Image: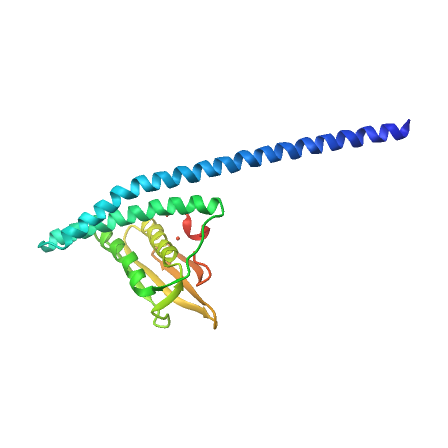
Length: 221
């Protein structure tokens, strides 16, 4: 009789454990289905929005090739850069979805660090002039002109770190600095530092293996 009493709690415990495992598997399946649906939705939305945005960018480019006065050129440049920024935000939303599903991959291709960083930061510098803000970019002379890695992710870091600083600063100077933190025969570690009157932020990313950028994307990437 005592032996039977011991077996009954053991059987009950196994049944409860099996029930919990089944529930966890069902929850996991539901979560995976939701993630797939979200990824499909984001991909579809991204495509639908990118098409007209690319048209705007293309038309702005055509205008830049016409005879414009200085003020008109400035407006067209702002239109083009704003459209490109919006396109970048849409791509970041898609990236976030890929990160959540573990499907984001980093590219390993050569890119010009100075041209890329200038192309990313300069439009933002133009947009904050009316707010009595200055945004300056410095790339350490020790950083070689071409690196291998994912330049798009690095641009995201720069853009969003600068955007965070702009949001926290009402006036004054914002400095974006890229400098060499470490170098080995096979890789280079860059440090991206954004300083402004409110605070100083320093986020490091390894090139070419990894890179880190607001939408809270910088640390996530």
